[in-house]
Length: 261
Image (cartoon, rainbow, N blue to C red; front, side):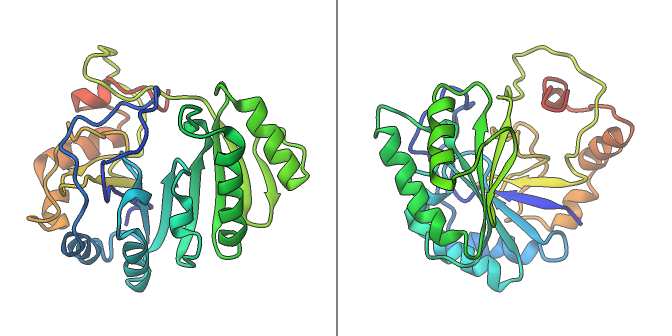
């Protein structure tokens, strides 16, 4: 049983953030019949679905249908978004948690007040049924202005991770560097929660070990054509899994990842 499985319902995004690895795959939106296959094949393997890997999930024209389908199948849905299209799900009561990456704000699109006020209007509604987690890089450009707006909105002094009101939180973290084969880190030792706590499924069905393999470098199989148990029992999966148990990184991409360092 995985603690969570990341499902990339689209790899399309409305932004081009400097900190993102960027999409090098063909743009795709997951079809409903494909999504239903995933819901069926993940039964018994996890209770938590995360609509996130690369791309902006709220761009999907069937975002609410997919949230509701997942909920009907007894999955708890979590979403990570840049917040620009949050109004598309503001009335959906089947979202367990929504993470809003405020460091994604782009001043070239709209002004900060407009961006935040639209988010606040929607989270006021969502927070009645959903956990709201505002995320912010500790060194983001507009950190001070965003914190001031949050403090004014919630009448709460923010000092690190803070509960702003019932079901609403702010969380700070350091910006991370995506794993890349060109980094040449050669980190053969180190812990990882991939394949033990989490798994990822790209929009084309490719199964990857974690949410950081956004390019599908470690292709473990395809959820549309294989049963998950066969993927888990495959030699490549087991070699990586057993390596992680011993804090050994087998795959080259993993050796070029320092996310948990």
